[in-house]
Amino acid sequence: MTLMQSAQSQADLGVLLARTRADFPILDQQASDGRPLVYLDHAATSQKPRQVLEALQRYYSADNANVHRGAHQLSARATESFEAARSTTADFVGAASATEIVFTRNATEAINLVARTWGDANLREGDEVLLTLMEHHSNLVPWQQLSQRTGCVLRHVGVTETGELDLDDFQAKLSPRTRLMSLVHISNALGCCNPLDVIIPAAHAVGALVLVDACQSLAHKPINVASLDVDFLVGSSHKLCGPTGMGFLWARQSLLEEMPPLLGGGEMIQDVFLDHSTWASLPHKFEAGTPAIGEAVGMGAAIRYLQSIGLDTIQAWEAQLTGHLFERLRGIDGLRILGPTPDQQSGRGALATFLVEGVHANDIAAMLDLSGICIRSGHHCCQPLHRYYNVTGSARASLSFTSTVDEIDRFADELQSVIAFFREHA
Image 1 (cartoon, helix red, strand yellow):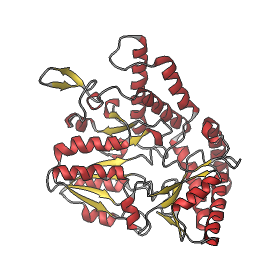
Image 2 (tube, rainbow, N blue to C red):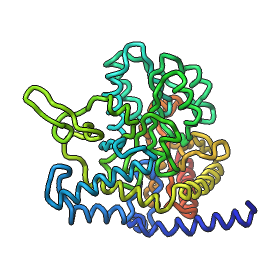
Image 3 (cartoon, rainbow, N blue to C red):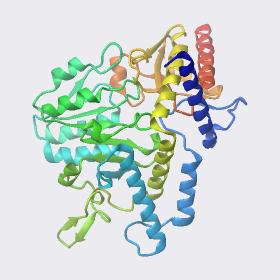
């Protein structure tokens, strides 16, 4: 590609994705200082386009009813919309069938479901579960609880000096005793993209299954479970421009058929007798009680919205934005970014987690908020990782396809002013 073609491509991406900002009413507001609000906390939760808000409004205004067990027209329409969202989700991740999609409250519940069903049924004392140092608490605590119940051993793969998964350590800790490898695809703290094309075949070679937490990747790049050859994959609606309170587990149908249900009650049964019950077919045996119908409809609308833009397009634009973000942050004295740079890992996530010498991350975030700039501070649900770096917290700016170069520049300029203020008054 020539320089002129590259410039034109960047311009086309910018024009296309700048149009999407009009779909997000929350971004069209002024902060308390009278300037436009800048939202750089997309890794914590995404904002919702009007197409999702309208889908929720339409469902509750016209179709609200319980699903699956009603003969009337409202129930029929609600069921159709609910199951259409399942089919949309299945298509989004390349599932072989919609029956492989189990709706959950969030990705955390999806991981717990695997730990409580597959884990309890299959792991015994001495079996090993391989995790990583960079995992979100949602991919650590359920396995700790499983270890306490079963006696299985948890092992953790470390990170390199550049903040990437240490593949030598992975190979050293992978063994015939490994029954499951559970890891994040893109780290919500380091931003690194873990090489699933290396990890999954290696785990399978020793007979282990692989669970992937795709919360930070699903809205940013194309994901296909068949191409990955993964065994379990979890996602969360609110990271996909969808409502909170909704997530999903994808698993191979053969695994789901063998796994016992987690919760008992209505909806997940086939027949109930006074002394025993039989279970509904997939995926309903895992979905006890009235589900989050509106939230599922909203997630389906959000996925269709992302598909209408194109994940390849989103990934390309966010890569440009991430490069600019790192360029601006590297120019700030005393600032250290955790995780690989875009030069070190081109497929890394669209975020930057950083430390500033002598200034607490919470103070940085609070001061930036006074200027109408929203970033995240704290341990980002990754306390073990922060202990590895010998810090209690960090600051994080995270982008989406709605972010702009101007927003990044304003953030960087304000950040420099905040740092200068604290150093002057130290």
